[in-house]
Amino acid sequence: MPKPHIPLEELRAQVATCRRCPLADGRTQTVFGDGNPDARVLFIGEAPGKNEDLQGVPFVGAAGQNLNQLLEIAGLKREDVFIANVLKCRPPGNRDPRPEEIEVCTPFLREQTRTINPEFIVTLGNFATKFVLKTEVGITRLHGTLQQAGRFKVFPIYHPAAAIYDRTKWAALENDFATLGELLKQ
Ligand code: URA
Image (cartoon, helix red, strand yellow):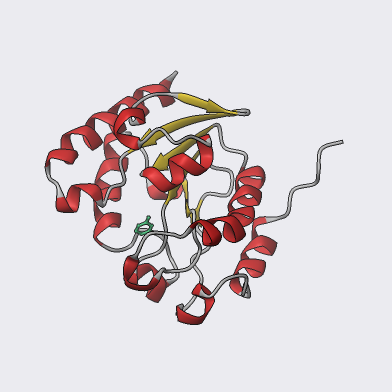
């Protein structure tokens, strides 16, 4: 028999009091995720940044502005999709997530994914892609290619923050979000 799903609000409450790793000491609050609990598409980013930590909502800073523009290209609105991160707490100075943080935090993401049960998972950047696909192949090779993980279609895309520092990534992001829009029409 399949395991029962944990309701999202119950998961949100579990995340809010989590003390599984030292990132709990530095956070303003956890960033559980946001959007439609019945979404067809689940976006997974890396970890909250400064603005997300302050507001408790994913992708509200500069990367979020980019993401909002890109969602439009795919014909999506934020309220249609669910947006979550690999880590629920901000790493200090926005450093990369550490393997031990990913290990203790991702059971929450796994449960979120089971509960939302999306058709597509869009992984934004290397950390989400490596976690979902269990691969060491980097985002530079995988972006824009349709993959499968269990029952989920997985579509890796560069992290929207990549275009903040490297404008040449913007064309690839636009192109991949346009492809995502086409995949969603099928
Ligand atoms: N970058 C991420 O990966 N996630 C956020 O929520 C914000 C910035």
